[in-house]
Every structure is written in C-alpha cells, then in structure tokens.
Amino acid sequence: MSELYWIPNVTDPADADPLVAADLYDHLRIDGTTYDTELAAMIAAATALAQDYLGQQLINATFAVTGRRFPLLSDHPDYAIELPVGPIQSITSIGYTDGNGDAQTVDSGDTTLLDDRDPPLIVPAFGCSWPTARSQLDAVTVTLVAGYGTAGSSVPEKILHAIRFMVAELFRNREATNAQLLTVPVRNLLDACRGGRLP
Image 1 (cartoon, rainbow, N blue to C red):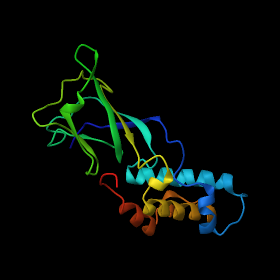
Image 2 (image 1 turned 180 degrees about the vertical axis):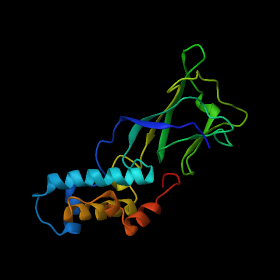
Image 3 (image 1 turned 30 degrees about the horizontal axis):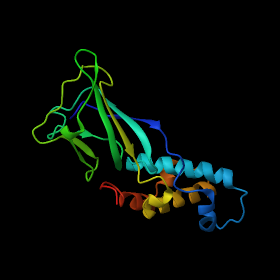
Image 4 (image 1 turned 60 degrees about the horizontal axis):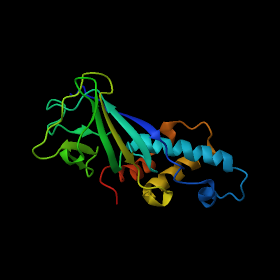
C-alpha cells in the first residue's frame, strides 16, 4: 500500500454554488424569498457533501495539491500522481523543491494527464521520469483547476438533482445527518457521475 498521499488545498475557491435558492422553489413547493438565506446555506452544505462523496469539485476552483515526493514504482505501477480531486480543467504547473532547496518546475511536455480515470492521474510522458525532489513535507505541488465549469449549468443534471434531494431533506429536517442525506437514490445519482473526463 502506498505511503504517498496527495493533499488538496483550495487556493482560489468557486465563485458560487451550482444552485441558487430560486432553483428550489418548485421542488420544495414554496413561493417567495422568505427562506432564501436558509436555502443558500442548505445548498452550500449539500454541495460540500456531494463534492466530498464524489471527490469532485463542481464549480471551477484552483487547488494546490501537495505531496512529500514524486511517486515511486511502489506507489503506483505507472509512477502516477493520483489527483484527489476532479474533473480536471487544466494543470497550471508541477513545482518541486530540489535537493539544494531550490524551487523548480517540471516541463509540461514531460508529463501526461489521464483525465479519463477515477482518480485522474498525471504520469511521466513516454521516455521521461520524475525528477528527484528533496525529502520534506510539501516537496511537490501540483497547481490545477478542477470543476465542471464556471456555472451550475455545466454540472451534470444527476448531481444537481442529488443536491435538490438533499436540500429537500434538510428543509424538512434541519437536524438531518449525512447518513440521512446520502440516501440510496442520492448515492445512485452521484455514483452515476463518478470518473471520466469532462463531458
């Protein structure tokens, strides 16, 4: 089992959630803006739960994904960096600290993004290998943009429907637990959107 872990840190969060309060009016059979503040908080909570469950970012955000070294064969048979978040819009850079303590950047032509996997992978390009990084925490940083797009209309409808289901349960039961929100229908909707590259 690999001892190499990749930690995602949001450096530029999403501008909005994939749904707004008005998107729930018909689903909840309510009229007017009385509950808009509560609904916004419920949408945010349901969105976060869906993202955690899927290992995905819904609306585009920038991440710094850090690890303590580059992968070895013992970590992955393809020496792959297993990205803990997707779908991947772009890889901005792969930086690392070399043996002298200096900041370096991997040439983008030396790597290949496999964004049709779950999780997405970055592997050395044919004939290339990872450089040697200094052995320390956060020695390697992958800066990337993940998400389906900049608006809720880019997010798969099955995910949006799952969020609506969770918000409806929170609206009925303000004390609902994650287990109560992640019902079988909700999990089925979310599971249908696992893996694969951007549509």
